Picture 1 (cartoon, rainbow, N blue to C red):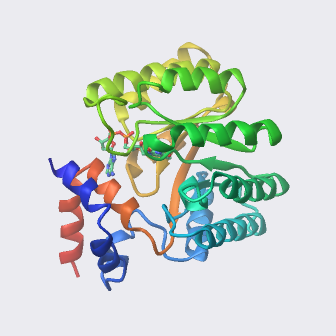
Picture 2 (picture 1 turned 90 degrees about the vertical axis):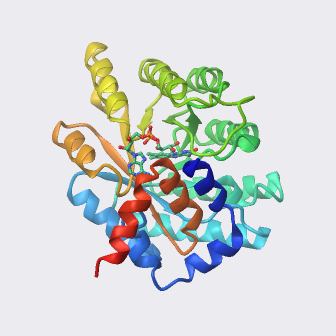
Picture 3 (picture 1 turned 180 degrees about the vertical axis):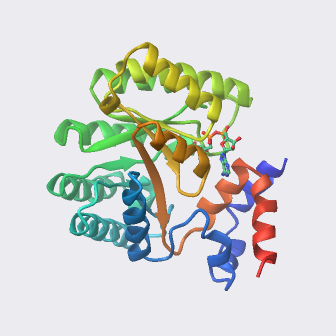
Amino acid sequence: MLRRSLLYLSQQAGLRRWMENSPLSRKLTSRFVAGRTLADGIRVLEKLFAENILGTLDHLGENVHSLEDAVRSRNSYLEALSQIEHAALPATVSIKLTQFGLDFSEQACRANVRALVERARAVNSRVEIDMEASAYTDRTLRLVMELHADFKGQVRAVIQAYLYRSEADIRMLSARGVPVRLCKGAYHESPSVAFARKPDVDTNYVKLMKLLLEEGTEPAIAGHDETIIRQAMRHIKEQNIAPDRYEFQMLYGIRRDLQRQLIARGFRLRLYVPYGDAWYPYFMRRLAERPANVLFLAKNLLRK
Ligand SMILES: Cc1cc2nc3c(=O)[nH]c(=O)nc-3n(C[C@H](O)[C@H](O)[C@H](O)COP(=O)(O)OP(=O)(O)OC[C@H]3O[C@@H](n4cnc5c(N)ncnc54)[C@H](O)[C@@H]3O)c2cc1C
């Protein structure tokens, strides 16, 4: 109930404007968001790298309002790649196609993303293409495959375990050698396309994770579910999967205890590091995933 309400609030424009301009925003978000500027994002990446943790930088913003906005997003990511190169960080960038103009023109979106992937190749980085709501899945995978055909290894797709179609998508991507990040899925989907019950999502996640670890190219196992992460570790050991063939991924600020454990045990870990002014929908989805966070934040706000 609270989860649904938070997901609903994540889409309310008026509340979003108010929250993003609130003087309390920094205090509210610092746990999950690196800061408002690219320099904040790079600073966090550097700090993480010193702890042997890799990063993927996300300039917050989705569903832009015009193609001009989309070009601005592309330019901000081009600058992010330049700064990543300048700081000599082994970091990638994560983008959303709606931020690159997908709602307006698939062709313009493709041109924007291609420019970014070209730059990623030049600076030895990679573009991870986040997966949004299921209305975008076909178009997103189509673009990822096109880019993979032209820039092999320079893009990573994301597959959501809550969608019924995901096993077929993983088989198709793995057969073509496309790197995949597996996550549970963060949007509110209809039971006609996605498992509605959490245990079913978790069971499907484990099945897909094993498939990816065995047949995928550089899979990223993304999430914070300790039971699932332990199952992944067991499977990796049993199947004797080499440590450079996969990585774990988590969100900045979530389950820092588990992050430290993975690093201490020698696993490769990459954190998703968001920065920017448009933090509201991202932040609300993090609250929706764990409504107990609302209490945690309320306590933080009351603390001086
Ligand atoms: C690197 C990365 C990239 C992602 N990319 C995408 C994407 O492209 N598209 C998409 O739809 N989704 C994406 N997600 C989000 C994902 O789909 C899930 O919504 C999110 O990871 C929560 O699922 P979970 O694996 O943590 O498992 P859950 O079952 O939700 O949580 C398991 C445990 O993790 C901890 N936990 C989880 N979330 C939180 C939180 N917000 N605060 C505190 N503790 C928490 C709690 O201990 C919880 O019990 C991504 C997630 C990660 C880690």
